[in-house]
Length: 345
View 1 (tube, one colour):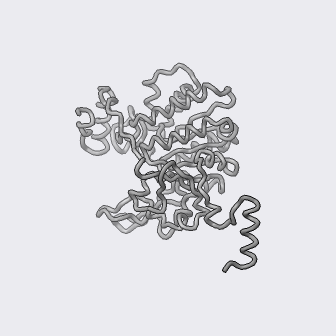
View 2 (spheres, one colour):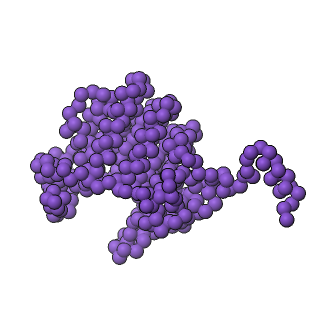
View 3 (tube, rainbow, N blue to C red):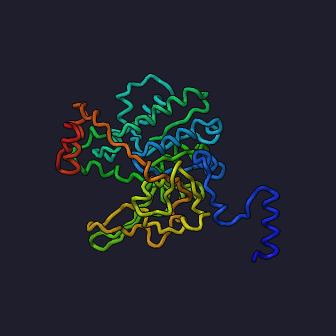
């Protein structure tokens, strides 16, 4: 039997057209993830979105929010992982509408420190820049978005050995520094899009074969260290079903959930969201006893049956210069050439 107080609350809520608030109601899922991302800029100067690489549908949400009339008043810069900062001047001119040869623009993602990994050869990463250029065409110069390339400025033409790459491997610190120097210190606001592992608030930790613990501080962790409370973190859970996180899957359209308010999702152990493995294939203890709400603020949930990850565009490897250069880099990094099936199908 309901108490008198409960009965009165139910009557009042019915009269006012609302429901009695509880923790689950506070975590109610908006139908509009793009709006939820924009709303985060009302309280934070940087909003970080962690992606599953190749998930073009997530980028569609980013384009949706950037095209809304209120977005240019809230966002100045779009910081991306898949761009070598050595080419910042090229991309600045390109997204501003200048006549820049496309071959020059492609260098931004073809020449990152992760090369010869071909992850950025998925068409969606080049399309991202062409779409921002198109959006900027409809904006006044003072409101146009700037795209910040956050990966380290390696010049592959000067690399002859793995040792030459040593100064460029600390990607996380460099990503944070680009956002700090090019956006935060100038009083601007940034949308930061990067792989999910880069947006955790907590350092990733592991123990090497000698039993020595190591920690990898993420770009978000670096930013929060220097500018506490600056970053709001949203993780796209496009592979939650793969990871066994049934609590973080949905059906139909993508949904947004605030993990700081959710009773169930926020208490999932963060380790369960990690794809990192030990040499024997067992899950790596990355976050200890930390929960998802310790490492991220919110999530965009996807129907596992609709998630499609885009593969590399293999036509790019018909470019003799690029294919030869990938093979040179592969010999430096791996001691073996590229998989020839990438080019000869």
